[in-house]
Image (cartoon, rainbow, N blue to C red):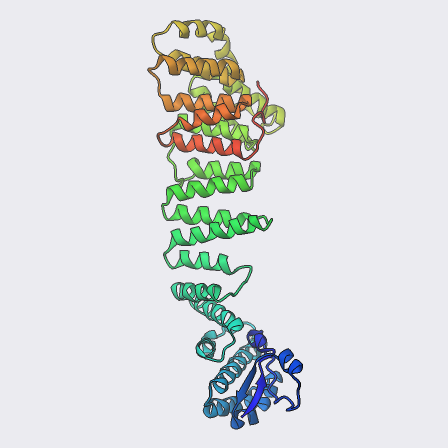
Amino acid sequence: MKTLSKLALAAVLATGVSGIALTAPAAAKDKKEQAAQGPQFKLSKPVLAVAGQAQTAIQQRNVAAAEPLVAQIEAAATTDDDKYIAAALRYDLENTKLVVAQQANPNAPLDETVLAKPLDALIAAKSTPAADRGKYLFRRGALAANGGQAQVAVQYFTQAKAAGYTSPDLDLQLAKLKVQSGDVAGGLTDLSSVIDAQKAAGQTPPEAYYRYAIATANAKGMRAQTVDWMKKYLVAYPTPKVWRDVILQYAFAQNAPVKADKLQQIDLFRLMRASNSLVDQAAYEEYAQAVYDRGNPYESAAVLKEGMASGKIPATSTFSKRLLGDANTAIKNEGSLATSEKQAAASKDGKLSAQTADAYLGQGNYAKAIELYRQALSKGGVDKDEVNTHLGIALARSGDKAGAQTAFSAVTTEPRAGIASLWTTWLQAGTSAAATPAA
């Protein structure tokens, strides 16, 4: 039997013909030359006699000439090396047929399943170089994925990765296939690992990764995972647009993972204001109306003035003008907050203290708001989670990051605990705690 260099076998999975050198090396080669050529295949005479002709025909895309030659090699193959070369040439030939067919009719569907058998043979062949096995496993997984066999594809991709195959998209494809196969938690865990690896390499994971994870987890009713991915997205991309998108999806969308009441939604509007994500007239006006309806004309007026000053609320908005007029009238009728503050101090419980603190929060007087929220907590008789949420907001807007985190961590019941965690994420994302000036 003759010997055949294994050089260029790595190209066997190229889009066209392999680069296998199907010629016998000269007998007088010295050791250095043989080492440069790499490990040697030993082919039987019947296989070596036609292998070169078959390869040439494939390179020339002469399918009619190549078919009987490859079939002859397959029939004559007796050794492990023969069988490996036969499988490699069969893969090349079938791949070439697909290329020729696609060029002849670009719109015609392609049946890639014909590549499965030679790939299986390449994967199983004893002579397959260890460095190439991962490539064959990956290509076999791609075939399964294209054929809608997600679970089978996961198995092949996992084996390819274990065999040392690397590709920029391998881990992402594996994560998505796990999701498609029903292992949503496993797929999202893999996706999280992909993101961590990219960050460790100094890369910025695409927004699409986070959006995919959020949509996938939410569609499966995985509330905790959905919210967790939302927070990861916000930390990675703390832009006004992303904050708006996440907050709306969090509690305002039809398929939102969290069901928040009107009062809880106000605290999310406050978060949108803090993150500069009140981006349009509708958001400002809905926010202003919500706080006005809850008896806080101070905040309603502040929000409307801010929207008008920024140009987000046009000067022609009759709704905003009317609501601002109503809010200013209510403020005038209520009189000084100092009176409410004195009454709150004399009250047996903390309800009036909390209400007065909300008014000060709406004014942007965070120092007074903090003082009265703490008074409300000490007096009792209030919803502690609600008051701690508002205390955290006041502390956050005043610039006391540590104090805000302490207050938010004291919120334990849902959905307020989740809202508090979003505020904590805002603090951790590095956004200025005074993004919006005091009114």
